[in-house]
Structure formats: C-alpha cells, structure tokens
Image 1 (cartoon, rainbow, N blue to C red):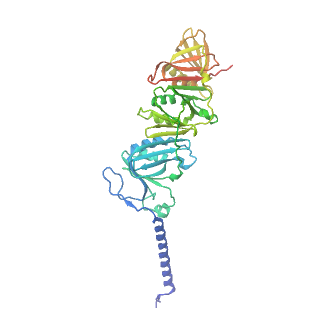
Image 2 (cartoon, rainbow, N blue to C red):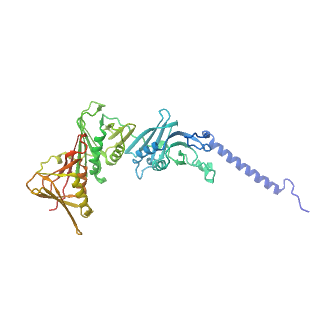
Image 3 (cartoon, rainbow, N blue to C red):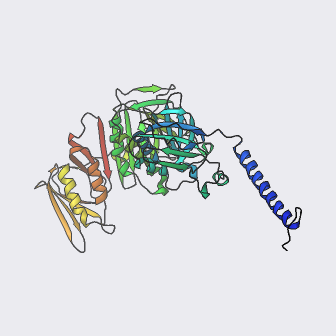
Amino acid sequence: MPTKTRPGTTKSRVKENSSSKTKTKADTRSAKTESLTEEKPKIETKSKPSSQSNIDSSTPLLSTGIQLICTQDNLATHLDLVSHAVPRQPTHPVLGNVLLVACSKNQQVKLSVFDMNLGIQTSFEAKVKASGAITIPVGLLSNIVGKLSPGDITLVNHTPLNTEDNEDNIPDKAEESHNPIATLIATTGRYQVRGLPTEEFPAIPEVNPTQRIHIPVEALKEGLKGTLFATTTDETKRVLTGVHFKIDQETIEFAATDGHRLAVITTSLQGVKRKKEADSTESLEFTVPAKSLVELERILSSRTSVDPVELSYEESKAIVEFGWGAQRLVTRCLEGAYPAYPELLKQDFKHQVTLEKAPLVKALERIAVLADKKEKTVNLRLNSEYQQVYLSLFREFGNGKEEMTACINSDSNMSISFNIKYFLEGVKSISSSEIQMQLDQRDSPTILVPFGNRDKPHILTDAKYLLMPIFKK
C-alpha cells in the first residue's frame, strides 16, 4: 500500500519552509521598493494631447523639475549658438554640458556653456510649466534636436531612464544613478539623455566694468575679419594667440601679429554711446583669445539686427564681455604685454605701388598652386619704366609667372620676396577696390593699405597690413 504523508512530516515541513522563505524575500523586496519611492513625487499620467501636443498619454512621467514646451527650430538655433564654446576634450565632464534653466515667471529658457575661459549665454521664450535647471551633454542634445522634425518639443526631467517593461528597467537598476535625466518628446519620437548635477556647473563670471562701450556691429565685424587671420596658433607665444584691443575716446583699434606679419584695423567711435561706471578717461587695452573672437564673429555673422554690441571690460579680473539682446559672450583675457607694434608702422617708404585688388588676388591664387611647405616664396619685381609688376615662383619641377599693370611712383626698379600665403591673406583682408603697397628696401617691411573705393564706405575704418619679406643674402 502507498504510504500517505501526514501533516508535519519532513517533506511537508520542507515545502512549508520553502514557501515561508519565498514570502519573506518578496516582503523584503516590497519593503525596499517602498523605501526607495517613499519621498518621491507621485507619478503623473499625462492626459491625451491636443492636436498641437506631442505627449503620449499612456506614458507615465515621474517629474522632478523642469517642464517646458518650445519649438524645435528655437531650441536648435540657440543650442548651435552656444555649443561651439564646448572644448573638444573637457577637463571635467560637466564642461561638456549645457546648463538649461527654465523660468515659469518670465516664460524664458536660458542656455549657458562655460569652459572656464569662454562662456556663452543665450535666452529665448518658451511655455514653461515648471521652473528648474539641468545640465545635459550639449553635443548629444544638439544632434538630437537638430534632427527632430519641425514642431513643438516637450522637455521634462524625471527619474526613470527607460519606460518599457524589460529586464533593464528594474527599479533597482534605474535608481543606481542620481544624475538627472532629460526627456525630449516630439511628434516623431521620444529621447532621453542623462545629465549631471547642476551644482557641478561653474558659474560664468559677472563683469563689473569701469566703462561700457557700444560698438556698431558692422565695425566690430570688420575689425575681427581684418585681424583674426594674423594671430598665431603657437601656444609658446601665448599673448600672440589673441587680438589686442586699444580703446580711447575716439577710436577702437584691433591688432594681431604672429611675428611675421601685423594686421591693424582702426575704427572711429565718434558718436558711439559710452557709459562711464567711474570717473576714468584712460584708454583701455587688453588682449582677447582668438578662439573667443572666432565664436563672437560667427555669432555676429548670423545676426540680422543692426543694434550695437555692448563691450564691458573689468581690469581687476581681466575679463571682457560682449553683450547684445538676450545674449552675452564672456571671456578671460590673455596675460602679458603685447608687442609695441605702432613703432613698426612709423616708417618712410620710397616706393608706392598701386594695383587692382581682384586681378592681384586671382594671380596669386593661380601661382600659389606651385607652393608647398618646402617652397612657398613668391617674388615681386617692379618695372617703373613699363609700369608693370611681375610675380614668379620657381620649383624644381616647374615654375609660374604672372604680370600685372600697376601704378609705380618711383624711377628705380626693385625686387622683393614674400611668403605667398601671408601675402595672399593680407591682400584679401584689405576691403577696397585697389591696394597700395608701400615699400623701402628688399629686406625691409612692406605695408599694404586700402586705396580706391571702399567695400563699405559707411564704416569709418583704416587698415594696415605689415608683411616681413623673405630675404636671402
């Protein structure tokens, strides 16, 4: 006969103990889950969107801060404006992020990027339902937003990184990181990006200047265009990696040199608004890194407004700010004394040669095809009798020659050689229909100045480009 197992036997006790352990384990997990969610906001289930909304009503969001709606175009444009300030290899992860601050009071979103030397800040209008701040990797965010379809984007920051029911969405795993998570919801999709705590993001310095100067935007753009190319990239010559500003009561001067050439642009400030924060009439001098000014030039080139740019400089902190509208660019200045370049421009020249700019640029571009790192010297020979200028470049495998009509106000002939890259860049930087070359000896500096009709006659500027010759005894 089969033996029946009575209650309380070993087999029965094993089954009961197993059931008891399972129940205890479940209770422990339940208690742990309750403790994790005890102090968190309640899950808000979004209602079914209107025709203009893009939030899926079936998706629960555990909102812990920002809630805003903005257009894809607006967010993409302003992200592009600040994203270029991010270094390629940030010294700290948060320096590769953009700080996004939303304010429900004034319905504004502010974006800030700062790499400890250069900071760019911009603001735009949005529908802000809940104020807050979050830092997000700017490169990734910019790429996502740039590829989204036009229309409204909803941005919130909440707790879970994934909302789908899979083994990777276990609460314990989702809560391993306390870093904020930004969720972007558009008409075509939903993206989530993990950020970093806002406390780690460094504050962009506030500038308390002695003077605020309003510079016409076109004059500022001309100054940058005419000097930035002449800066050096050699970090051992740190102060030469920037553009030197000299501002007095009537003019603002931009200067740049790499040791082989010098570009100087002077713009009149007559009639420009100046606001003194203190009783000071002394001129201002400071050197701004070329990297910062390249970003400033890029931003100004995309502007359609003709409103002037406000320049503010604080000497004690060695920082300068360029502000316009809801945007500002703040940068640290370069340390060190800038070379005494004005003395180089005070020379007497025996020869003046005037040429048309467009034909000269084309001739140099053609002959530059023969140049490379090994040989890049172009020779200029002046013939006053025939009023001609001859350009030549000789190589082992071939050579090139060009001739141009010129106006030479000297009876003597001479030859002089230049680095063709520096010569071509200098010619291109002069904004006029003709260019005058001022020369003395074949081993002395040459200065290029504008002549004839100006490209922008309404902008009162003066330009000088000094070029050191290549002289071989």
